[in-house]
Image (cartoon, rainbow, N blue to C red):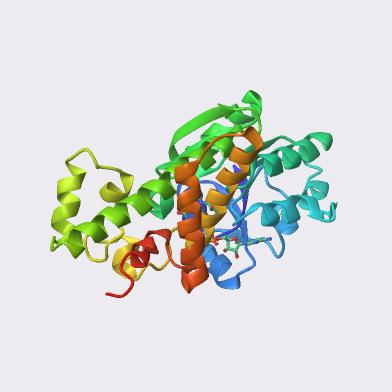
Amino acid sequence: MKIAFIGLGNMGAPMAANLLQAGHDVCVFDLVEAAMADLEGQGARRGESAEAACRDAETVISMLPAGAHVRSLYLGRDGEGGLLDALDHKPLIIDASTISPDDARAEGEAAAERGLTYLDAPVSGGVGGAKAGTLTFIVGGEAVGFDQAKPVLEGMGKNIFHAGEIGAGQVAKICNNMLLGILMSGTAEALALGVKNGLDPAVLSEIMKQSSGGNWALNVYNPWPGVMEGSAASRDYQGGFLTDLMAKDLGLAWELALKAKATVPMGSQARNLFALHSAQGSGQLDFSSIQTLYRAGE
Ligand code: NAD
């Protein structure tokens, strides 16, 4: 299949690489030259613009930081000059970024007006899952589009869920990430408490993994440096899932809560922690660096 892939960051680059591995013909575009050169080295074609990358694509996949980037890509500035206006050959559009459900619905409606099928398909599984091709895709949109997208998504992920109508993928993803923000900060808090009381963080992690506090952060994303080989914590919190992106997702959860009059005290606490951590200069570090907030003054 001919696929255009737009956004080759921490997640997009390994996802596009897996599509190449799966035998697809992939044309890439990113604002960062080095990111395109790297994929070219792995067999991808490059587009000089998003529009050029999509010219002969049967499927367009985007993996961008936030709603504003996705909006400006597809709808253009002030609704003019967006990519949707350049897709006369009607490829399937899959946006895998995490953005607000309202943004996804707006893009979906604009796509439908032009006879295009648009799916929101945010992912879970982190950079490790992106590299291993084991991501979870949480898809919102029409069933017919979902059926069309599934074989492509299977080249990058292991679990492909159809959450419901357009926007439903984002709602499920935002609920998941609110829980992730809570459990990562809770894990960091428990580890710091144990260490300040004389425990070895690796020993404490092993104990909690096998006990009722066991969770995803302890199993695959331990926030304490040196406890887990290959973790972001063990490489000075470089790469991975940025604190600023977690703060964005917790903000999206807050917006959903306001709209639905839902109560999210734990999510609000986590949002404030990550916003404070970002304000202190850690926005571009992996989100597990929240651990350092609990180690201040050491
Ligand atoms: P990133 O910041 O590493 O990468 C984003 C890429 O998009 C960058 O290479 C940037 O140059 C490019 N970009 C921005 N605007 C562009 C445009 N107009 N045209 C072309 N390229 C453009 O972000 P990431 O970590 O890869 O995350 C991408 C999305 O996936 C985010 O919405 C994030 O919330 C979500 N996500 C991330 C993770 C993770 O572990 N990193 C996990 C799940 C979901």
